[in-house]
Length: 72
Image 1: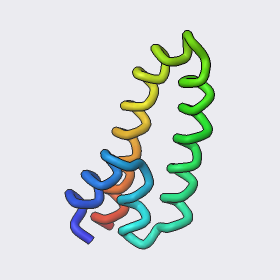
Image 2 (image 1 turned 90 degrees about the vertical axis):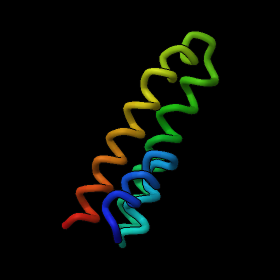
Image 3 (image 1 turned 180 degrees about the horizontal axis):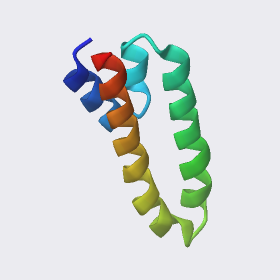
């Protein structure tokens, strides 16, 4: 898999780039962590503001990880 494509895929949906690169379990864990971290934040009033800072960081880390996995 092309590392750039894997990185872009995980930038939009964290874990997708890992799954496309053959690391399906790793991609699933990343996606589930995103859901488990962001959902409670969004469901609370003050957490919505915090989620806007946390979610982009998760997307960037997942994209970087997917890029590295696909490049290996």
